[in-house]
Image 1 (spheres, helix red, strand yellow):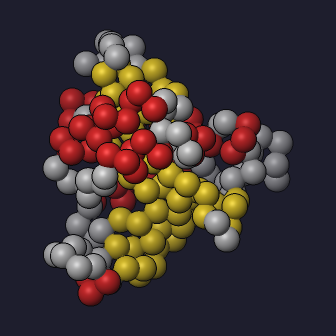
Image 2 (image 1 turned 90 degrees about the horizontal axis):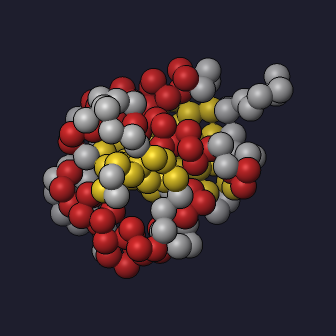
Length: 167
């Protein structure tokens, strides 16, 4: 798979169905409504990225800026096709979002991760190291906050992110 060219870019509305299918196929992530994926590919396209390989969506990162902290990108979902895992694709998708001019003022990344999701914790730790910044964790959502069976979610805070030329 690594021989095939992977393109990373902003999503477009016509990719929403494929993103929905990718998230569904992970069997790990909470599947949101099709309508939400349409919004993420239109209203929130500047804070989301997709990875394409031969017209197939093999990776997706969704995010949004926190309304009360516009310098903070909240990474909501990271979905990678099982055939493309272990290639650093998730970090590349997040980096693609950060490098856009419109996002040049983002100083922090927040995300929530269940304690059992060791691969996501490892990926965000590697991302913090790549960005040469700190990562902190604290309790955020408890099991009791959810209607259905759902593990607690810890908040991971990455930052501050320094850009080229910043000290």
